[in-house]
Image (cartoon, rainbow, N blue to C red; front, side):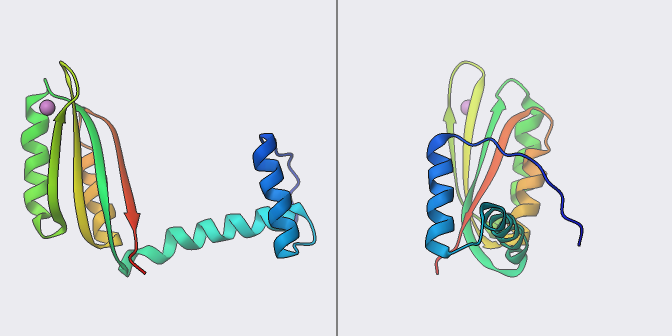
Length: 133
Ligand code: NI
């Protein structure tokens, strides 16, 4: 396969971590170590879908957009079997922070998170997943 070259800029501590990783794992060079990390990232992204995981969906949205709340509640009812708890915090006059604890198959959690994050008026949303083993 053809090799592409590019230059990488790293903060000094990350650069030291990379060199330490190269030495500890005996990579022949930094390029191989970076290639390994990219492949690992790709695998981590893919293994998920049929694995049982737990996690949290964090949403920040504008409390003044009323239709957003009912839309969000509709979606949460649709996926009720994945949702363990919902914590709502009124951040300030207009912003709400919602933390939704979830458990289920990673693929299902991603679908739920995508549906919630896509709702108009959601300013920021993120899904964090973890495994028990
Ligand atoms: Ni609120």
